[in-house]
Image (cartoon, one colour):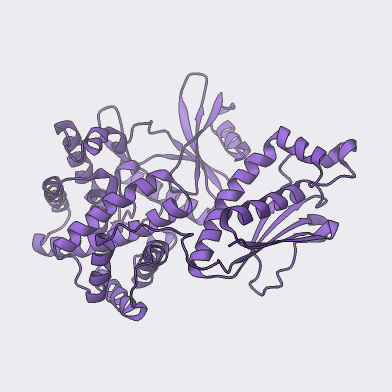
Length: 483
C-alpha cells in the first residue's frame, strides 16, 4: 500500500516526516490502517480507504460525536481527494483484548472484565440518542437509515454466503416470504436514534483508566436501539453466559432511561427479533470472510455463532415458520459451508488476458461488461534492461528476474486472494463466466507473467477451464477443466 499521501498529510500537520509508518493489522475491513510515530514516540493513526463516501461518513460522524463530548478519535487532517485521513491514536488496548480471560475460560468472566462490560454498555445510549441529536443522517454511508431493502440485503447475504453453501434444502419462495415479513417487522419503528451497526468489543478502545472510546462507526445510520445491544451481547466469540447478558441489558436500559422513557417488556420483545436478525447477518459475514476469504478468526467464530442461534431458537426467537424449520435443521447438522463442494464438474469458465495499456483494455465478448483489470505497472519492469527487451514473461530469464526482485509475488498474492474468493462465489452460485485482465506498459513482461500464473493457479486449485490470451503476443491457450 502506497503511504506517500499519508506521510504528506503528516508533514503538513506536524511540520516534519514521521520517524516510522507501520501497518496495523485489520480484520474485516477494506481500509488500511497505519501508525505514524515521531522520534519522541508520539503517534497518530493514518487511514487509507478505497471508498471516499465511507471515509467521509467516518470523518463527519467523528466530528459530530466529538462536539457532543462522546469518546471517539479526533480527525486531524484529510487528503483533498478524500482517500485518506489522520486521526488521534487511541492506543493498542481494545475491550476485546481485556476480555481474553473470559473468552478463553468459556464465559467465566472476572469481576474486572464485568466492570469493563458494564462501563462500556452504559455509554452506548449516549452515542445512540445524544449522538443522533442534530445529526445529518444523509451523511451516513451507504444509506441514511435501516430500511427493508437494507434488511433484505443482509438476509440474502446469509442465504447466499452461508445457507446455500451448507447444501441444506429450503423452499426459495417460502423463505423469501419469511424474510420479507421479518424485514417489515424490523423496520416498523426505528425512531430518530443512531444505530452504530458494528458495536462490538473489537471496536472499543480503552484508555489507561479503562474508559471506553469508540471506533469504526462509519457504517452507522438511523436505526433501532436494539440492534447495537444484540451486536454487543451476542458477539459469537465472546460466549457471554445468559446471566451476564441479562445483567448488561439491565445496565443498558437504566442508562437509556436518562434519555427517554423505556417500556422494558416491549424493548426485550423487539430485542429478541433483532438478535435473530443479527445472528443471521453475522453468519453470512463469517461465511464470506471465513470460507471464501480464508480469514481464520471468522471461521473460528462460526461454531459459537451457531450455538447462539441454537439458543435463540430454543427460546422461541423465530416466529417465521419456514425460516424456523430451516434454521432448526441448520443448527442440528454438523455440515459446514464448503464453497467448492459439489458433485458436478464446475461449469465456470475463466478468461485471463495480458495486454498493453497503450493498445487499450481487452473487450469482453461475453456480454457481461468486463471483469477485474489489474495494473502491473507499479512493479519492477524487466523491459527497462537490454537483456530482457526481446523476451516475455514466459521466458525463464524474465521469470527469474521478476521472482528474485519479489515485487510481482507480493502483487500476485493479493490478486490470488481476491480471485479465489470471487471464483468460489461464482462456482457456488452456478455462474459460467469470469474475466481477469493484467496490463502493463508493453503487455510483454509483467502482465504476461501475472496472467500466466493466475491462469495456472485457478486451473490447478479449482479444476476449472481457464482460457488464457496474451494479446500482444497473439498467444492463446486453454487450460482444460479437470474431473
